[in-house]
Amino acid sequence: MGGAFNLGKIFGIQFRLHYSWFFVFGLITVSLAWQYFPFIYPGWGSGTYWAVGIVASLLFFTSVVAHELAHSLVGRANGIPVKSITLFIFGGVAHMTREAARYGAEFRMAVAGPVASLLIGGLFFLLHLLLGDMSELIAAMAFWLATINVVLAVFNLIPGFPLDGGRVFRSLLWRFSGDYQRATQIATRVGRGVGYAFILGGISMIFLFPQQWFSGLWLAFIGWFLSSVASASYRRARWQEALRRLTAAEAMTSGCPVVSSEVMVGRLVQEYVFLSGHRCFLVTDNSELQGILTLGNIKSIARSDWETTRVADIMTPAGKLKVAYPEQDVLSVLEQMEESGVNQMPVVSGGKVIGLVIRDNIIRLLRTRTELKI
Image (cartoon, rainbow, N blue to C red):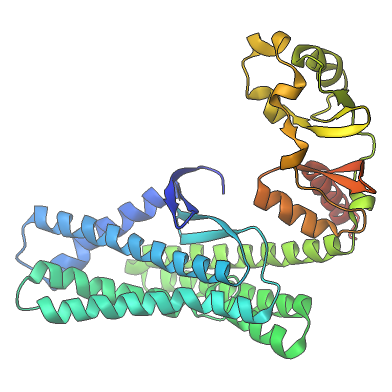
């Protein structure tokens, strides 16, 4: 997700914050400080309302992090690598490098988030009961956090893809039909239906209850987001199925330039990059693969060092490369690229490199197939 910056890692999972998060954080804080707490607990000072609103908002998003982390840890335990989690305007989203290979894994991963939210809600409600007579401020925050976490769990259990409930629904369809594609199609259609229902409900609220126009607008916006993501999820599933039927030998580029490890970077840039536009090179010595050089490697050194730096000094060595095989399906190759953080992978047959699978080429292939309605 673009427009996000890194916060750090928890259990090896990168957490990122999208700029849209600040909007919803401010919206929730203002709502709590101006409306909710003043209405429920009149008599506090203005500064107190704002302080409690800010702390409650931060704790709420901490709960969202726990919700997404539960998904990620259970997913990782079931063989679904999670690269990062991004907090944005609608909460959080986990970036998985591949989808679940079994319906049971998807079911367990999907229910982990709502279960975590329900447990967090229960803990905050217990805190509300224990501190009700000791600190009204903490008890008030705890009650709101208990309520909002239960609401978060219930909302996510709506059976509309890509909500958690939609993933549970898909896993059950997958279990009983044995057809992942069919299950995805039905789940995403239901997801679009849920999104349209939200849009209709939001528009109706605007006209029937004009004083609640902002809530209606927000509800319609959420519905639009859900329907859009459901459609995109189905397209992605169809692309994945297409890539499963395509082999690395069919998708590879066989004309990738081969250069010597002793060539200077400056000469390579002048004679290959500038003239032909190539972005990736196989590095060999006596026909034996030594590594791969990409534009990323070249950009890692200062331009003033190009004339004194050999290709061998900055290439990715063969020992660190992930390789693909001619009959391997392209989807698994892309998943390996995603996990390794690379954009190309050599195809090896009989110990020799026969081509290169490049991510950009696969994207162009998908776009072409889409345009031709294949």
